[in-house]
Length: 112
Length: 113
Image (tube, rainbow over all chains, first blue to last red; front, side, top):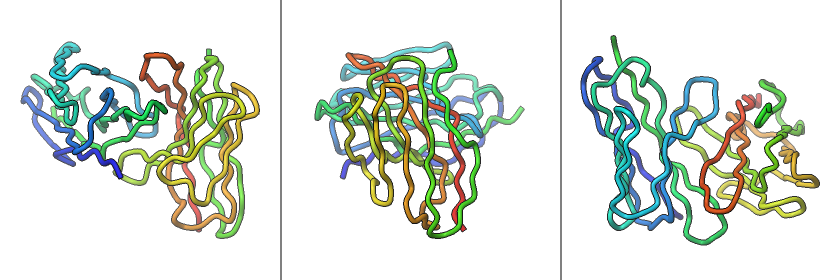
């Protein structure tokens, strides 16, 4: 069974602080997606990384895919209350069937 | 475009009852997925479809059935509902090809008592 573990599970920080969320597995993935989910809604895609070592930036968010394509990180600089939500990583399986495994989730709360 | 729509939004079932969760998309995407999300957790894949007439099991298919007779619709059937099926159910689509982006519906919150 392939697993994606996220850490930390919960994070409560003050506005302006920096944070990093980790997504780890022992399995190799063809791609890695990061989603954000607001209460009562479905997840919305933030970014997809596909190449080992790839780094992508989305305003204050920086995403990195591990060299071996087994792990990823999401770094938020100067967090804002609007960043509050559930962050999910999802790994694309390499079997070619286009199935995805979702991580356990990190619930972030940014206090004003 | 409505994207991905799911009905109903909320439902309470008694143990042993059956129901169908509806999912419809207007994006002409080939791939469709059903996930469940338990409180505070990530999503687990129940079933998926790569096109009309083709479905396959995900991680947690027991107690569920699906069909895909058209590109647009991908209903999820629960037979003999159990308390363990209390969850939020999300339908998602993906265009196909090299894109990994999944588009999610708003979810159906199901409680089995």
